[in-house]
Amino acid sequence: MSMTMTQKILAAHAGLDKVEAGQLVLVDLDRVLGNDITSPVAIREFENIGGAKVYDKDKVTMVMDHFAPNKDIKAATQCKMCRDFCDKHEVTHFYDVGQMGIEHALLPEKGLVVPGDVVIGADSHTCTYGALGAFSTGVGSTDMACGMATGKAWFKVPSAIKFVLKGKLNKYVSGKDVILHIIGKIGVDGALYKSMEFTGEGVKALTIFDRLTISNMAIEAGAKNGIFEVDEETVRYVKERSNRDFPIYKADEDAIYDATYEIDLSTIKSTVAFPHLPENTKTFDEIGEIKIDQVVIGSCTNGQYKDLAEAAEIFKGRKVAKRVRAIIIPATQDIYMKAMENGLLKIFIEAGCIVSTPTCGPCLGGYMGILAAGERAVATTNRNFVGRMGHVDSEVYLASPTVAAASAITGYISDPLEVMA
Amino acid sequence: MTFNGKAIKYGDNVDTDVIIPARYLNTIDKKELASHCMEDIDKEFVNKVREGDVMVAGYNFGCGSSREHAPIAIKASGISLVIARSFARIFYRNSINIGLAILECDEAVDGISEGDQVEADLDNGVIYNRTTGKSFKTQPFPPFIQKIITNGGLVASIQKGDVK
Image (cartoon, rainbow over all chains, first blue to last red; front, side, top):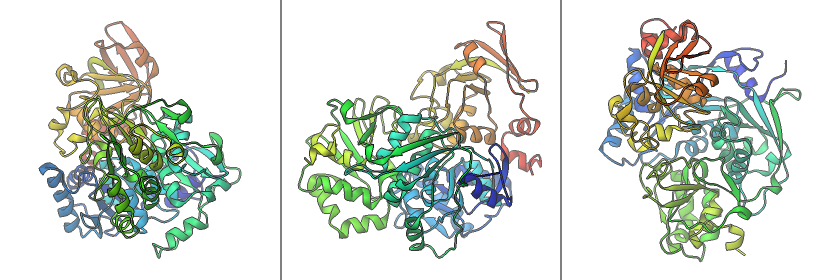
């Protein structure tokens, strides 16, 4: 019986030779993650279990990123609850203001995930680590609590959709355009309960950061996980950050997929998802003149150094349009430092952008860039639901860092090719 | 296990951001979360919902964020059961884990309108629309899921020794 890459990882972690789609398995967890809004609920449930201890203080991980630095007294109280819990249980990987970054950029950067790992996180974008060839998926706080206590979680083994990539991306087009293109094609529940597996010679032409963006938004197609085949680039990225040995899993040649899509990366154009669903995608031949009020470049989807560098290329020597607020959020302290050392922050500030400390803030309408009624934002974030970034009558347009930067310059949703022409 | 209440109906792709907007996620207080439940798509929800009511919706209910605050807010608002055409997977898991009854049934979604009186018998897998007199077949809940829901969630079931 042949298996997909995801099935092989789950089988190995369940102590089984083989598994098949639909089978329920209990698997060992390599990492259990939570943030400052999901962990408090998990801690309450963990304490309800009574006498529970964390299964491994090096594997439980908490990152204060959503409403941190604390946006108000209630948020401060929630972060304090997490801090006290991590102190009590001697949790090694607790990341607070000063060390923290946006969790899904921070964990890969710190080498906390390696290929073949099984990771659960009480955050839906935990699927990001599929880019490194790990099985990782979002869960709720109760699953996080039980995972912290037992080191195990049960799963229904998913079936899979295969995406065979070929060719390479054009200038100003990136992983964000690839995943928006795919979600536009299959819909917000197109991969519901399933794995998305990315393979083909085109994978090699994608940087790790493009892959992280693509896996990050697998959840926006309803997927359980979005996983990339491991190549030399994955191994290089991980070995620079972790001393752990890891097996490399590869799907069987004759593994069964529910559907297979071939995607020629060279045909993908800059893509924008219109309100209020990530599947409402358009390319610039279908986009008219849409005036905007705000641009956000950052988040777990597009807050990497590569994203900032691509935006900086467009901001360099240009000015943000009048009446547009441009907010740049490096995802981690290391990214922030590198952006500073390489002069990116100067380019952003000279252009009229602001640069924030790492936070999820505006992506989920928390703080640091909330929209008023009738306002529109172009954001490199991952969701454009009703009210996502503020007032219920505001609008979010999802796009790549280059589209976001180009739009900040013109004040309209703009194609970077035109701004740079 | 039976449920009885009037139907409150929504469409497709109801996401967890409208079920409980992130601006209220600075608390884990169930009553406070419930007081903002559905407010970004239905400001009247909190005024019209009564204990026992049944939420009925279309495809991909609960998509988006993994926030367990979403099923917690729905349950604490008084909703006893959610019937939809399909659910986003994290929301599905979270609902069972916190003891909110939830099931997929296309026919019931087609055959129930806003305000209809709905009764569900999940031992036998039947949903009744008492307003129209129609009934719909569904999968009965397996006993272990019924126990998790009756106990009020997975952790409560572990405490009682019903889940090992």
